[in-house]
Length: 234
Image (cartoon, rainbow, N blue to C red; front, side):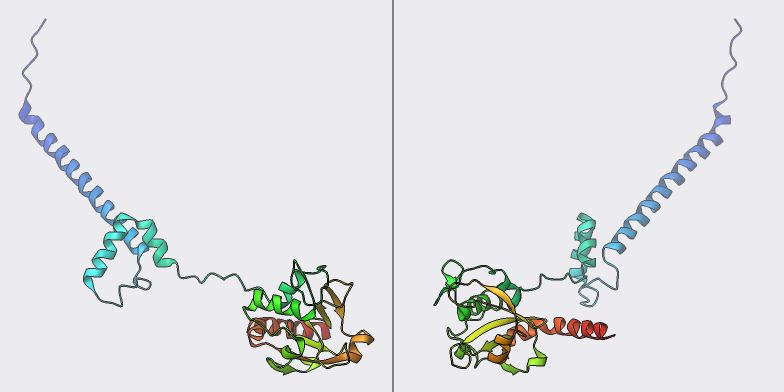
């Protein structure tokens, strides 16, 4: 066998230098790209227009904020962008609360579902549960509360009064809309909904009162009611 000629390592030096240069360029490019990606994530986590620390101008607080971003970028992003107001659960209205007790037996002097309701007991119980109000026990005393309301301006939740015992304001119910009201009628009956246009109730109607708390709850409903009336009249 013939001997191999000796390898000329000097000829390979330019190639090795070029390869080393290429590796350095590749490593530098990776560092730059990583820096860009990190910077982008920080911008998403706290942009200038939503970062609460920008207006403060406290550099130490901002540094702490950025440190938190680095440790938990997703959490910081959600915190910075959580500015959408979530609709709260609307409070239960006086009328809808009273409707929960349809079918409860009438009981003179009763003011709980277990004991039964009389007319003022139902209104008093529903007002405390829905509005947080403790109303007087007698319907005649309730008729002194709130503001007087005309028959053609009744809104859901207004208290409606009748003369059923030869005395004004001796009976009370809760207006539901569309000339209907919920009440505890009399002995032997149950909590139910009735129409105020029936002759018996029309003759005995004494007026209505609007509680302040119920009025505040009904403001958006009142607007919707007027719109509905406009649509119905077309």
